[in-house]
Length: 263
Ligand code: IPD
Ligand code: CA
Ligand code: CA
Image (cartoon, protein in one colour):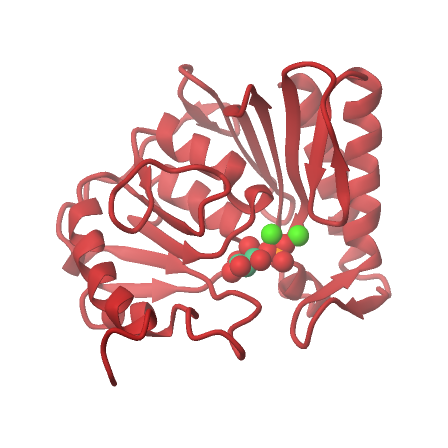
């Protein structure tokens, strides 16, 4: 935890100071961009953790994949919220998780603009800047503030979250699209959001946040309420109390997004 926190704080501070500097932007797809800061933050985190734990494996967004020699693997997103960062919209995080035999046992998410660090170790509770956090007590979807995001293949794929978004718009109190899935999950954990759903997230987007939600007393599953894996294409996280109501709404949109229903 000390090493993960140190790496997240250092990378986050580098990103914060990079907000005002020129950045090089390149494109992985039509709307999927990456900056030189994504790469720099990845290198920094990798160097810190690999020198502290030489036998550990690594998986991170910008092409980093190293098999573990033992049982541990770090799964991290050096900059979650790249589109925001590239536009100088000050909402992004550094997200670092540690897996042991395929199970997430530690998560750290750092928001350098608000200087908020969320962390959890399996079985030990969840914390924001050192203080214990819990999910909200909202038990009615009509009173729930939800968060979501959209996949980068939104223009090409019919599995694009638009039907779900429309369905929740008229059933929840309101929806926010912040642009950092790791932050969305941490906000569920500390009760700022009551629920979150998203399609096609990658392991590094949600590995840390999911543990933090669970350790804060929340529930995480796929869109049908089944068990959640970090390779899952469906992420649903909530305070637990509105989980079933969210599953019901997601079942409406699922029929439509898989082509089972016409507009
Ligand atoms: C993205 C953010 C965003 C989510 C996207 C992710 P990136 O990660 O988490 O909130 O909607 O699906 O890919 O590309 O900024 O690291
Ligand atoms: Ca991400
Ligand atoms: Ca990223």
